[in-house]
Length: 301
Image 1 (spheres, helix red, strand yellow):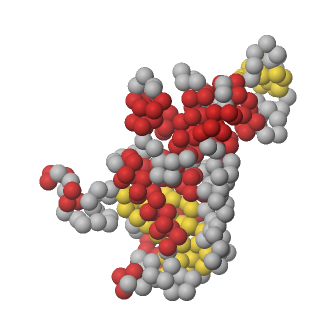
Image 2 (tube, one colour; image 1 turned 90 degrees about the vertical axis):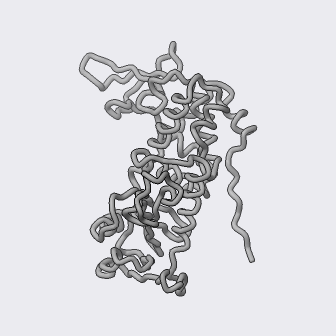
């Protein structure tokens, strides 16, 4: 039986050698942000000139008649207007990417030695926001769709915070729906409810109608998808989990990683910020075979 080839990510010694100074980080950011040449972050023009007396700063001549616009490599990125050095930003990003189940802001605060926890919390959330996939291609091939619920068990809550429901919608847990392409990428979103219209809207946004198979469980909200998709379902309540190629094991594997991270690393995630945590897990999963996951993350920042 063959084994999959292991993808080696950048180790700490390799990171230290690649980024000894802030200037080394700025050079790397320039290369990954503008791989085909520097462009003005305001108007998008490539009619820019490097300022010889100020490193990593340029001047755009097309931003206004008789007026030029000066900008640095940090303008328009998550690193702009902060008191934290770029090398420290890079260190936090590397730590978040190499931790399969994530790393908490408290851990970042302790290891980086920031002046306050608020600084670490702010940085982590800005990075997560940058990792959100704003442009993605619809999933093709064999695609699995499933929903899950994020939150603590009702029996473990204080008596006055219990919902009286064991699980699912109405239990106080947050609902996340996801689609996973076999041996490919995953798309996951936080949703408000489990209505048929909500499920169908997500599937139409995430999955191409040209997919070869759409595999789900027996949830009633998926039933109308058969009109536009080659849809088949497994019946989990009847303890039916795999019927040939029909199963939801791939997306359930992603849920397992995400839930282990939320419960074991972050412990509690609010409804307001849950989409950012989902985006972080989605980015790491989708770049699991990318040897330059760090460069891909920097390009989004």
